[in-house]
Each structure stands twice: as C-alpha cells, then as structure tokens.
Image (cartoon, rainbow, N blue to C red; front, side, top):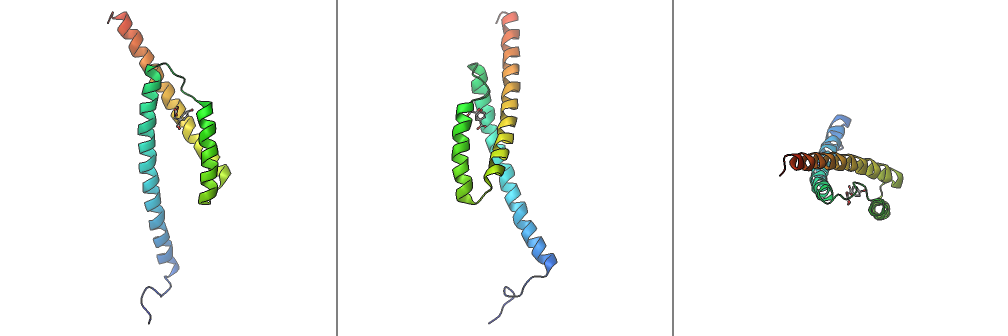
Length: 115
Ligand SMILES: O=C(O)C(=O)C[C@]1(C(=O)O)C=C[C@@H](O)C=C1
C-alpha cells in the first residue's frame, strides 16, 4: 500500500520541511539562552553584592570538562563546543562587570548621601 508519506518530497518541499525543523530548534535555543542569561544575571547581582570576582576559572574548567563529555556523547564537535562555551561565558563575564560597576556606583552615591 502506498500513501502520500511514501512519495519523496520535491526538493523545494524537502528544504522547507528541513528549515521548519531548523526554525523550531533555533526557537528552543533562543528561549534556553534567554533563561541562562536571566540566571547568570542573578549570579552577577549576587557576586556584585558580595564583591566576588566576575570570573571563576576553576568553575569554567569543571564546566568545560563536563561539556566535552556531553559533546562527545551527543555527537557535537568538541572544538565547536569549547568555542561556543567560551564565547557565552565571555558575554556573561562582561555582563557581570557591568552589574558590579553599577552596584559600586549605587553604593558610593548612597554613602555620599549619608544613607
Ligand atoms: O558560576 C559562576 O560563577 C558564573 O558566574 C557563571 C559562569 C557561567 O556562565 O556559567 C560565568 C562566569 C564564570 O567564570 C563561571 C561560570
């Protein structure tokens, strides 16, 4: 028995179907990244209020070790994973530094105001 599902799609429809899958994956990535940045913004605020350093190289080393294993298990290129993670964490650290400097400004202006 044949059905429309057995008929190979023409290239235009195949490409459209693949692009639909890509769009779904991109949407998931964007939502996951947004959630990760909301979480790291909280970490940045916590670090700033306790004057902790923006960067934690020991933690990053642990994350990279874990991510290398995950990448291999998932069939994702190890070097790409490292590059992507390093880029992501670079953004997070830059954001942490902005939060820290705003927090310092606030605390010095409230000291001047005698609060
Ligand atoms: O876990 C932390 O301390 C963070 O600030 C988060 C994070 C990350 O994005 O995963 C970012 C910077 C640090 O160097 C390590 C990890």
